[in-house]
Length: 137
Image 1 (cartoon, rainbow, N blue to C red):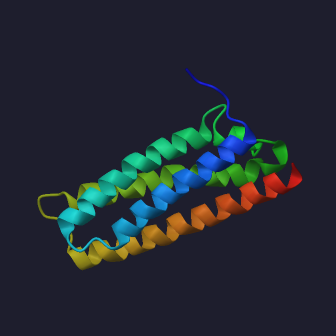
Image 2: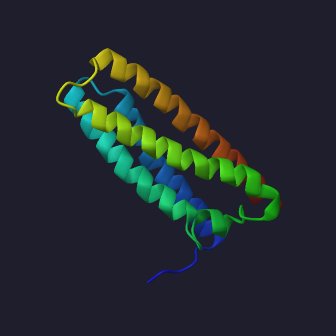
């Protein structure tokens, strides 16, 4: 059963989901070894794919918050593009970390640090858009 979220429900869900994702991103950034890094990447990839789907679907968070309005479409398109790029980067890092001859752990940690920066930038831009939309309601 699918139902459309109210803007208030969508905002609450967005905040709660971002808290869970922040925890996973922190765990990824603190992974002490290759097996921990692989597990953290896999879990984050699964969680982000679900999160991005919920944000993008009709009646989902973006729709409920009104960010699909024409004036917000360019910024929304950039966020959706981020979703594909970020999910792909996480998947690729996970595959490389699980390869029979993975890159060195320090090299992977550097790439993970860049990924964490990109995730934080995406979240910042998303929060800015949501705040702007919410202030007009």
